[in-house]
Length: 252
Image (cartoon, rainbow, N blue to C red; front, side, top):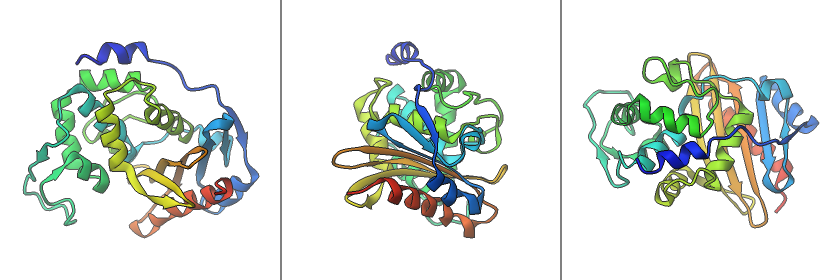
């Protein structure tokens, strides 16, 4: 737990971004009643499709696996090479019904693995990390998986604030933990940039998320897309909206 004191010292409020509503992002988001936030890091201007929607908090769904994994690895409670043994329950997806590492659990959004991670961490330790990360409303109370059915809430603007601090290691976490989670988020390339991302879908409130960042040669672009999802067939909208937004800002 040697990093917990450092984390508490790092506690801070969100960056004082200049937030601007973008007509282009509004046009992209409008047909789907979505909220899109896009942040070119060097400009210190956070562009949003709608200021009110981008500041509205909803369930984070599996985007919470990023801070959850960081807490587990940084605290030393979970080892990077540990394999979680499948509990034998059939969850209807072959990629979930097997033994896996934490890296794989992040990639396939294995809720059962993170329920085990949460049990080992305990609420007190996880509370310290979530507070230090200033993650959304910081309320991890409620039944597991609380990121899907509990009281934790976060906005697109807050997602970007967390992602930038994580990517630049503002929190002074163990570098091995940071690199491990970054590797798990690696999801391809776009216009010569490397993309890191995490999906999420909370059926309780319909929040469909796609958050992450593009590492480009001369800039880092952070993004958060939230769109109401009613069925699995709509899930592809999350990535599609993110790519449309990226196409506006990234010119490589």
